[in-house]
Length: 515
Ligand code: GAP
Picture (tube, rainbow, N blue to C red):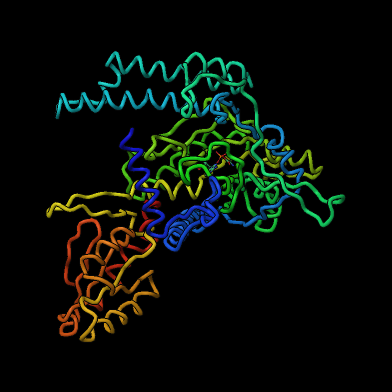
């Protein structure tokens, strides 16, 4: 665990040092759980967003996109249930005066049990070598079975207590598990209380007439309130989807783990409107489609797992998370929720306006059901970034830091480097950048020795470096260096654009989704 913590710290400082993520308003010592994206971070974030958007909107003829406002009529949040039920169960430690999410304290306890299971597996794998059958070991080893049973029982009880709003039992569970405050080490806890996560603000010029508003805590409601607008103007037939990316705001209590849990963050959500009764089929469909989207990036499947929700949100009849193995363990990356007709029915009731769909095949009007996929863009950024961060020992005894970001998502696709700053090499290198820049992000870099420039581009995650040398001027070839293998090959300048495009074009990734 200590090692993972160390790695995570290095990832955070790398993100800052190389212009990916900065603490917000840092010159004033920052603002807790709020971050800014730097010049390379914004490029990576835009590329992830584009991958998501095109996979949803461009590749599906029955999914369209919108961009709704952050401010919404305040009744929206009454109808959606957020005013009454968008709460976190909080507990304070009386000695450290620190506030925690009670459910997260219990989940962290369970994560420690899971870490013990992983340790047992690693030990056994070492002992048995090639003979080791992990599946069989997990199903038969008595110690592992004990751990698993304990973890399952704890999560089940937590889920049930939260479902029943039995906060006294959540506290009892924390006490029974003897969970101590990570800060003070004491078990002197207050009762568990609910705390609403929405940020309030005001609209209007004078205090007397101002209207209380909320900053939206999810983008989804902007889609629900526009359901009929889109359906009618786009003449959409069920099943169809509406996609949106945009900012959401939550007054999160646990402000840690870098950009994993932020107070201002970005969501990429898609609401898929379906006939009632088909939700199970579409739930399975979108679970598979979304996992495939992640796996197409080439990150090992072992880093992903589904986690079914024990406690269903007030709107859902089924829900699961796609969890990712972050440096601090498996945690939610994306949610897939079967939301029934809760939202549309509730808006219909509060707004007093019909939000029904006339189904020509069934010859009846009804309120559609909704299948939602919802992923945090910042969390996806963290998943990609933390997975990419690699410290690689080299043959000469040194270590290189390389960001193995999938080439298609990398902020810069190619760096063009003149071997020396004279003899016409810089001019030739600049010409190459000018040719490539129409198809991909290409940069020119002439500072320092070429070896250092390679290291710098490795640390930025640039998948290719092109070096222009004296031979280039004679025969029109350059060396093309691959970030991950560090192999170099001589290629013709005329074919460079085509060779690179195959590797870095978003199309190559999108094509994997339709296979
Ligand atoms: N419309 C459904 C919804 O908002 P959610 O599970 O609360 O569901 C969806 O959020 C996704 O948004 C999460 O899976 C996560 O990736 C991201 N997310 C939620 N809260 C976040 C936060 N405080 N910081 C960063 N990302 C967050």
